[in-house]
Image (cartoon, rainbow, N blue to C red; front, side, top):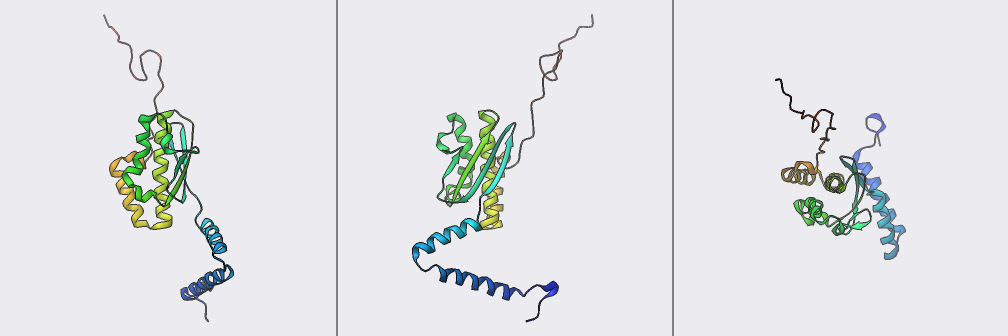
Length: 186
């Protein structure tokens, strides 16, 4: 068979090679238990964690999304144990906006450090949103990822886009960064 430009093989031949490899893989694993074990290993190799790092002030959150049962853990503990309770709703926002059905086939693991309670919560929600979009675009399809992205941005832009604002330090001669003491000319 003649090669295509640059020594490449025709697409049909490549597909046949892939199919033959998969058939060979299935034949080697005959028992259902072995087949299940090898299949999960193969999926793990093909679909590794999809990390997404986000920052808010000095808090940094890294979220890893992978196939699973819908568990979301933050620093090893379940999402419903996030403190303070008032800010817990902020962490739930990406889940509520995207819909629980979009989170059901995923496990998301978040590591967060630095900053205070509020900035950590905002970094967590941003990392969860970005990890969900990254997972959908890589493993499901680009259209559903784009729809999800539009839905999240329509609800709150800071779910996906970082807020670069920082507090300006106070200077002498006034009560704040820009405010000056009142001055009398007479």
